[in-house]
Length: 244
Image (tube, rainbow, N blue to C red; front, side, top):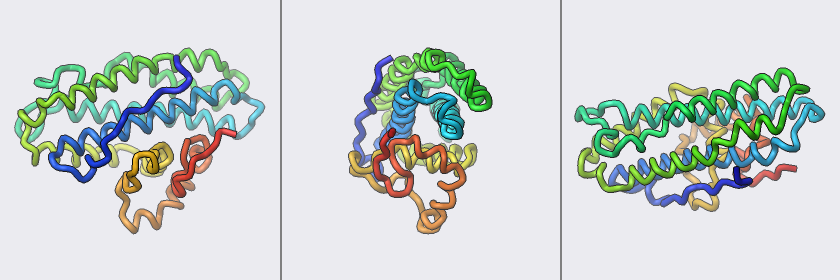
């Protein structure tokens, strides 16, 4: 497994673009990149974190488990989006091919292993085994490959031929709402904010947060504040965070 995984390039104009396909590609790629940045941080920190770090080690294990949970949620959301029938009674998988659904059993199993072991080590820090953790995380190359193939499927030109733009747009919004309802906002929102590179993407407005939501953001971030110190960016200031 390489030490650093490259994130996917993103066309940030897709957030405001029409057709809906551009919006879908941008949102889907943004979320994948948050997961890859978290995975990079984990593989960097695994060799140096141990029981001698006390409470910080426990928080790091919670951070690892959170990465696994967010990854599983993303994969489940993608399966729901691409495999379930839409308002036209069509399944995107039928004309995009099975590669459009990244929620394969192999990845689910590996991510559940990551979550399980990190929870166990968080409760028993002296049992932590760095090599075992890195071995469990060795599926990252397959994860990136599966994600890449999915993005290729979305961009192959078939969606706009088969699905009305209005319906596709409604599908995207419905899936976003489903993810929000299915997850804990005190985990989901800070995770996205602390793993999204707003500056390099020239996109400070993702995810979209209402003025009321921004006013509550410090309180939301503070619920699990110990997790986000391991993330690459501060969830509120957006400043880069070092690993030291």
